[in-house]
Structures are given as structure tokens and as C-alpha cells.
Length: 482
Image (cartoon, rainbow, N blue to C red; front, side):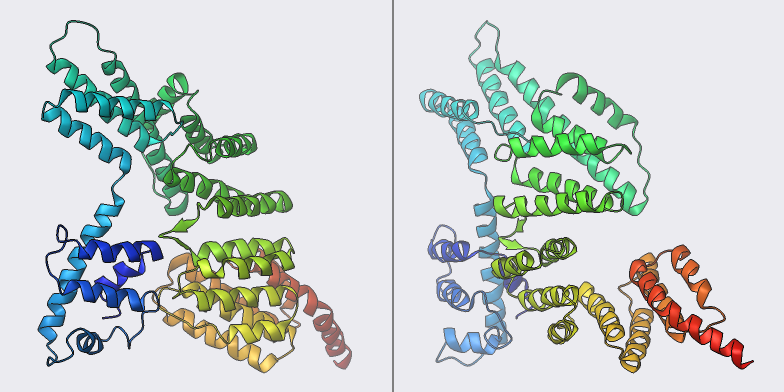
């Protein structure tokens, strides 16, 4: 049961949501099967530490039906029914309060409750006028309201100009433009990452319309700056403009769109680190920290272990070791319980390695567990061990680790194409360096520079520079012997 759909769904709930699920299950309006109430209470008791024992079907059955013989069929139906209730609950809590109010106004209109309808739409319009919310979801909500008011106006058969139709049109345009710009950004990203070509004729019209009609709208301006940032070579001004817009509208854009914008800005900085390492490295770190403070990096109330890893890596590269250790400890509880162990030990290993405490790094690496879907930890651990064994002059362990890594790469089916090739090339060049063949050693430097794809090329070059005097000394000895 631990891998069941039911447990997967419950894992995504927060503490508060888990509590309200009990009320939801106890409500006869949403659930008419009384036996699900004690089942939901049991699930809350074991939340979030689900394991093979407390999720065992027989254990659960005995807990719920103390005097009955175990029935696989009965526990199966119970799980299925609980999953259905949980699905209803997730839909219920996902309902946007604004859209719910618009739906209520629509119901009042359809039932010809004029006074109640008017009061509700006036409240909604006042709510729109009193906030600066932007983004396609908010424009769509405004469009729905004014479209509803326009239809209601037509039903009244009043012979005068209806301003609602203009507002309907304006908000529909804003919704369409902002949505299309977001889609265009995603397609541009796929072109870069996957090499897929896209047809741009349709989007050129959208871009021109956005520039000519909506350039004054901050979120449209943000999309245009992001597109320019990823399309132009000299794009630093676009990045700085976008950063300013995001900071000024932190509470006006939706979380979904803010997450997108920050993802694009951080990726932009990471891609340009080779142009100005200190500037873009610091910018990426600042963006991550700013996002943490505003709570924009959380998915289902948890911080991604990979986002956590990226922030720590940037802290290490900036040599802010104590700050990075504090960050590890401050945010480790924000990682999903299933991922905390590896996230903690691998990132501590990174810190110790950077501080040249190789024993400390190795101690933490030994704690890392290789799980399905966490290939980055597996590969990262193997790479770090190779570097540690080299620094500790443990040549036998080093050669053994390179051989084992090579076999792992060749057999692994998850790694493909360039991702696999960069690690295989690393192992190959590492082995060549360690052979210290005086006849061919000097050629390895050029090979490192020209081999593509290749990971950790700078580290390989540092090994070359470290070994070069020793190999050349050996070469001179050989010549003298001859």
C-alpha cells in the first residue's frame, strides 16, 4: 500500500490540509460511508512518516476491524473509496475563491435574483478595482465578470451604451496576449533545450500587438523583457529591467507566473556564468534567496531537493561556507521527508569537499542512499569520490572507482545521449591522465579542451597541470637511461 495512489495523494498534503481532510471526510455531504472516517483518522496518525509497516494492509485492517478476519477485497474497496473522497477534497480546496464568487453571481443572474446579483457583482468589481493583481488568471476572471454583466445588461433590454462590453474585450485581449506570450517563452525554451524548431509567424503578430497596445502593463512588459533576454546576445539590460519589474510587482503577479519568471532569470544567470562568473553567480544566488524569502520556490508546500542543491552549490562556488551551512540547516526541514536524508548528507559532503576536508566529505557520501529517480546523487557521489581518492593519493581506490563508474554508466538505461557521453568521456580522460604515459601525456591537455561533451573539464585540466612536472621528470629519466 505504501506505493498506492492513495498514499501518493496524501503525501502531497500539508499539515493543515491533512487536518481539514478529516472534517471533509466527516461531512455527509461529501462522504456517506462512515467507515472512511476512522480510516482518515488513522492516515492522519501515520502522516507524514509512511513506511512499509504502518502502511501494511493487514495492519490497517486490524486497526479498523479488530474482531473481523482479514479481507483483501474489503481493504481494497476501502482504499478505493478513500481515494475518491480525497480526489473530491483536492478539487474542493483547489477552487479559486474569486472564481467561486463569479460562479455565484452567475447563479444569481440565471435565477433572476436582481438585488442579490447586483450586490454580488458590485462587490466583485470593487474587489478588482482595489487590487493590482495581474496575470492571465486574473484577466480571465475579469473577463468572466464583465462578460456576465454584459449578458445581464442585454437581458434587461435597455437602449443605451453598455461599458461592460468594452471591459470584456479589453480583459479578454489581456488574457489572450499574456497567455500566448507565456506559451511562446516555453517554446523558445524547448528550442534551446531540445533543439526543436518552432513556427514564429503567429507569435510575431502577438509580440507586435503586445508592444503597441500593452507595453504599459507590467506583466506584459515582463514577458517581453524575458523573451528579449533569451533571444538577444546583448541582453543584460533586459535582465536588469525584468529584475526591477519582478521586485516592484512581487505581490501583484500570480505565484505560478512569478515561479516562471524567476526560473527563466535564474537559468539565464546560470547560462552566462562563463561570461562574468562573479556577477552572474552572485545574481543567481540573490534570486534564489529572494525567492526563498517570498516563498515562491515551494511545490505542494515542499522545497525541491534539486533547488535546494542548486542554491547550496552557488553558495559553495561563492565560498560562503558558513552561510551555506546555515542555509542547509535552516531549510532541510522544508524538503520532503522522503528526500531529506540524501539532501542533507550529499550537500554536507559538497561543503566539506570544497573546504578540503576530504575525510568529512567521504563520511557524508557513505550516508547517501541510491534511490530510483535520484540519479543525480548517484552520479554526483561517484564523481566526488574520484576527486577525493585523487586528493588523498589513494590510487588503487581511485582506479577501482573509475572502472566501477564506467561500468555503471554503460549499463545504466536512464542516462542517454550527451548526458551519458559527458561522464564516459570524463572517465576515459581521467584514466589516461593516471596512466602517466610520457609519450602521449602532453597531447591529453588538448584532448581535454576539445572533447565534447565533457563534464568537469576544469578539474581534469587541474589534474593535468598537477601531474605534468612529475611525468616530464620521468620522461627525462627515461631519455637519460636510453
